Length: 275
Image (tube, rainbow, N blue to C red):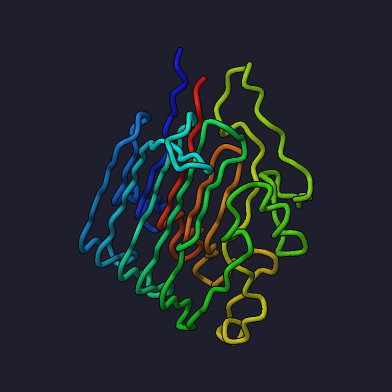
């Protein structure tokens, strides 16, 4: 059977669920999923509002995947190997969550490039950012973490040594100088079964005196802020495996008086050759 690429890309503008004071599903907004054979898909939502809890002026999501012949480095002619390009992006304008978290613009972007040779293929999150972000009235300028410009796991090993803490799914710190185990292709299994690194696209906010003065508690090592009587806010949460990447620009674990979980600007992508 001829080798073919199994595309993998999806995007979500906003979704979640509320458990208090109402038991409600915050239905996914602006979702787009790329067919496994590639192509393109997009979605747009305008003037969204869920009660008085969350709203945005507009949001659009785009995913695409296409294949091009790779060029021979010597003479520029098409080479025997092929290259596959995948894009997953979300843009949210005018986001407001309970008046505590506001942003003029939230952009999540993942691009990947695969060739028929090589295993650790480039996946890049550059271009992901939040403009005019405010938490509890305090303006935050998020500082990019080195992982923002990491394309491969080899880049993570090189650029993230001595940087902010990386976590695995068990919650413990990991040594980024060691390789993640490769999947045994002779056995069935999804990419999600691979070991994962969980980190942030941005550096921690523990040195932000304005946040402390406003009664908020930044957590050292990850880009996270706790707002009393509101909940925990995670910025640029990035999940890395050998075969996939998932970026959530804003994730909220609401506490009291509202309780629930909200995610905004979520993109995922990569893909793999089969067989």
